Image 1 (tube, helix red, strand yellow):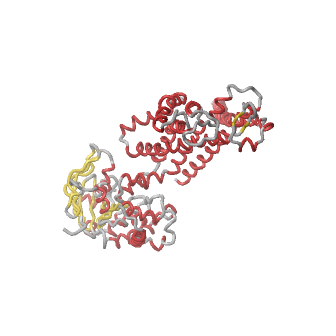
Image 2 (cartoon, rainbow over the protein chains, first blue to last red):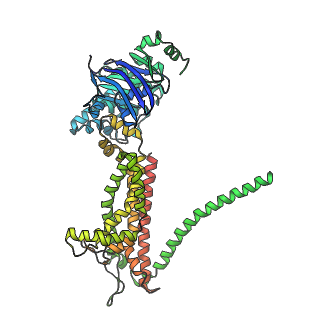
Image 3 (tube, rainbow over the protein chains, first blue to last red):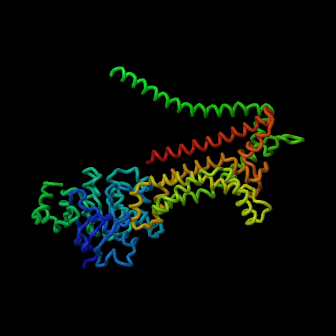
Length: 252
Length: 297
């Protein structure tokens, strides 16, 4: 199996008694963008959070099945959750930089993992901000508060922050839903660039966005994975009637 | 119908006025207290110079040879006991607040929160009693002193009394930190502990500072517990193990026995005025910090 690929096998997910995801199996190939689409409440974000075990933070949740990264089950025994989240970065729906300086935001992850060398930190901060296409805009104000930049810049800062811990896989939960079209376009370009180095999984509420940026698309409905495959195929020749209804805008 | 609507309009106005009156009453009481203190304390300075009052370390209004009205020792004792109480109560209070809002399981919280509220309701005379029979002897034993009625005893008691304020307001501040920050931190592979210390507490810092200020206001104005537990020697304290007498204790001890309308009597009001100004300043500063905090949100 290729490095940095993810595979989900027979995954069931429960919020208490509520069976939120039904028997989902899906492969997310390395260095590709896989997008999850579907109407609100279909389970796509819940599914995304099972991939770095963020659902563990919610009390009363339960997972059955396996999520394999490079063949290893992240729900198996002996998995260090801190190490897992280092390998699987996450960008959230609302840009959520810490109320600290831009520099400290990006340096937060490496510092949390024990890096103290100032030169190395400087280098990581610069590289991460460059990778997130933000360096040129903020290089002169690294010490000013991250709360003072625009929404789009904040989201790219969050991406830089996630990249700074050198993950293999990047999960994005509707990263552009709170942004204007120009900021959205920048993030989409960025995702295009990032897939060279990272495996990207993105949840999006916009079918156009999925069509524009992803190589593979998975359609979720009511906790079921209805259909998945190459993006072109899903959008041009969907096999399932529900998928077709959704992408043609008959519901959703 | 029309008459009734007119009537309800009047009623509406009356209710409005009633609440306005209540609000004004509080302001009136505050101004009244300030006026009373000022009015009763001013005659002090007919006989005692202001300079002496604020610079002399000797408080001895009933001296046989020479009376002296210097409050420096009293102010210093008050500050010493208060700061001591904060050194003890702040780390404990913040840790407790962090535990309550971030770590404690629901069950533990259900038991702890009411317990802390009960702690706030214990009369200060009971706390003072504890100082005499429990903490005093403990301090005497540990530090090998003749008795445990001293500044550090007062600090411990005031710390206990300031704890509920510090805990509950800090907890509110920590609770108000958006979940987004914590999620972002955890998603970066930070541990819960790192998230708490590096993200959550710094984000709640101004609220925590306000909590500390309010706790300090509580400690500085407390009378009975310090009166009972600090030994009440109105001399300039030499160490944290010296017996001290705070501003509040001085008023508490002397006002009951002083002859009316003497300089001694007036000077106790002046001491009260100083205390009033001190707590007033602390309240203003904590208010300012809180406002800043809300603006930043």
